[in-house]
Structure formats: structure tokens, C-alpha cells
Amino acid sequence: DEVEDSILKVRGRAPSCSRQLEGTGFVVGPQLVMTNAHVVAGTSDTSVEVRNSRGRITSLDARVVVYDPNVDVAVLRVPDLDADVLPFDREVADVGSDAIVIGYPLDGPYTAAPAKIRQRIQLNGPNIYDNGEVSRDVYTVRAKVQSGNSGGPMINPQGAVVGVVFGAALDDSETGFVLTSEQVQAALQQAQGRTRPVDTGACA
Image (cartoon, rainbow, N blue to C red; front, side, top):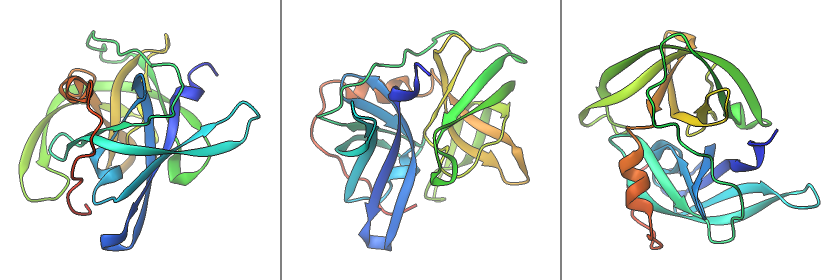
């Protein structure tokens, strides 16, 4: 699978709430990995897992350089990362079009699941700390989205990223919510050239 090496498991340690966090991220620039803010919230220590040339899983240190708890997006700088960048599709995806949700659900193996785009909406809801209301530009998709898929990409059949998975409907495990590629561009711009870690707030 040609995109697999660009989609990484993200791990974070959040001692302040005695928690290990895990999710998915994907390569958005040289040494840059995008994920959800809630995957790295409150962490003091973040890493990504990659497969080395011998096929073994190794862990690379990562630093959170962009952290946006309102949109629920974060960008990590991974100095030792050498992986292809997944391009964003800047066009709006058509309702009814096919897509693929990729990630590491339930901390398990790499999984690519079929998805169908239902609609594009302005989704109003709480930020990741439940202390503020935000409106996000979101696709609702029919797909099985589980814990661990968070921060992973939704790609079109051509392999371009159309959005970033950030949640599932509480009442329906077959409905996922995906930030549009447009909604996450500001975070991508902010990450350019940033090397210093930023505060990841409290655990979410």
C-alpha cells in the first residue's frame, strides 16, 4: 500500500492524568505529522511509530509545534522522519463520493476502511475541553470510525487527503466526522518552520 508508510501511529504520555494516549497521524510536510489535538492533549512526551528498512516498528520522538483545541488539530515535528508527504486535495469532495478512512483503530494494526461522504456541514459543538462552543467545517461520512482512528486521514481513491478524522457520532458507530482539508490548512501553515514545542494544555 503506497500510502501506508506516510500514516503513523501516534503515542503520547500524559502524566498529569496518568494516561497513555494513542491515535493516528499522517505526513503533511518534511518532518511534519498532522493529528488531532485530543490525541496529544496534556502530553509531556509524544512519539510516532514507523517501520524501518528491516520491517521492524521503531519509535521516533516528536514535538507538538501546533496545538489547536478548538478545531481539534495538532501538528508534530519529527526530526528523524523520512516519509513521503500525503498531498491534500484542495477541492471540496462531492456528496456521495467514495473515500477511505485510514488509521490504527483501537490501537490495533493499520486499517483502511471504506467510507462514503454524506454531506458537508458546519458542525457546532464543544471544543475538546467542553468549555467553549466551536463551529467546524466537517464532512459527515458513513464509515466505521473507532477510537484510535482519531487524527488519521480520509483519502480519495487517488490517494489525496480530503480530510482529517476526529470523531464518531455517539449514537451511531457507522457515522464519522471528518475535518475538511480546508479547515486544517491554517494549522499546516502555522507549522512551517516551527521547531519549538508548544503547550499542549490539560488532558482532554
